[in-house]
Amino acid sequence: MSFACQILASFLLMFSFSTTGETPGNNTVYGILDQDINLDISDSQMNNDFADIQWEKDGARIARRKNETDPQNDKYQVFKNGTLKIKHLKRNDSGNYKASTYSETGKHVLEKTFDLKILEAVSKPVISWSCTNTTLTCEVKKGTDYKLRLYRKGISIKEDHKIIVYKWKNVNELYNCIASNEASEENDTVTITCSGKVDIYLIVGICGAGITFFIFVALLIVYISKRKKQHRRRDGEELDIRVHRITSEERTQKPHQIPGSAPQNPAVSQPPPPPGHRTQAPGHRPPPPGHRVQHQQQQQQQQQKRPLPPHGTQGHQQKGPPLPRPRVQPKPPRGFTENS
Image (cartoon, rainbow, N blue to C red):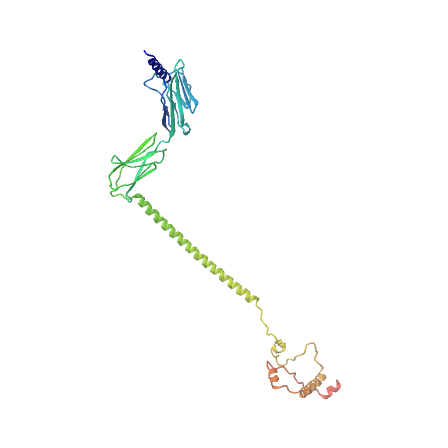
């Protein structure tokens, strides 16, 4: 064997020794929320009898199985072939997992890594259709990163990531809707039928619109009646205020006197005295009979000497009732006067 062949053989031996038991690559796996998952490292081409198996998550050791002993753990379990079981997956369980296996002599046998992602399982899709609008709808209520596919008679006709709305043309056709993500898959199948069937949504819509209209009319009638009552009440209050104001003004109003007019003579306003009544000046007592006769004679003489008033003045003085005149008494006998 030449020297060059020896060098090539030694290089091949070194390469095979350095790669013994190592599986390169990073596998992406998907787990379902609240379910279990197994990370399997078994390989049919290699001996799966390991003396020491260690599992790490993001660089930190989480589980180990050595010499056929598996310590109890509520979250992780390592089987004899090196498979790791993770129980009751949560969203924080996602990350990078690495398995390292060793033989009884401590030789590194196998190393394998996984990129675990946690997804929520999709729910069963719901298919509904309208005979009025001739539309078909497919949607799901739960799921993470799901995709919808709609099939008609086994032929894919539409895909979407949120909801599918399809305008159908013929009735009595078979439609299948599939919802899936990397961890789960669900489907539903329906046949569109509209013969003699009244759209329940149309009936509900008409009933709802009618009830809303009647409620609106009732509220409008109540509002108008309240407004009329308020106007009547306001008009009545304004009328009461006006009547009260006019009454108070009449009570407080006083009669006005004509400026420059003289007060009425109390003697003129008084009714004439009855016959036989004598008027006496206040504060004066009647004179005795003898002096009374002399006084009357003196008044008659003064009246004869007084000049007559003008015609206009006389007419002005004659207004009103006539003044009473003193009654002339007969003269007493002469002898009686002398004796007195």
